[in-house]
Length: 117
Image (cartoon, rainbow, N blue to C red; front, side):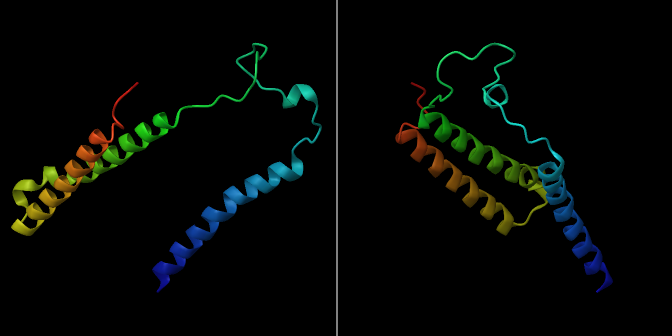
């Protein structure tokens, strides 16, 4: 049971440190807003035009699809490294996992999410 006390202590300290830093910033930080501090900063150049820039939703969808397949590749790497030492069940599970990925790729391809226009 003593091992779990250390885990709980680390979790508590891990939560207190960032929360304490944020609270200290609010308490001790300067609070003198003015128009110059509230303006948009663009690498030392005076901002021109409106600060609101709207991106197409396609960029976000493309990034999410990339992220999903990238994370799945990370999950497949250890399986591929130990493929020769795995039993039949693990090989079948890997093939099912790859099949699900292929179905997802075909779905996104047919929906046109991979088209960059």
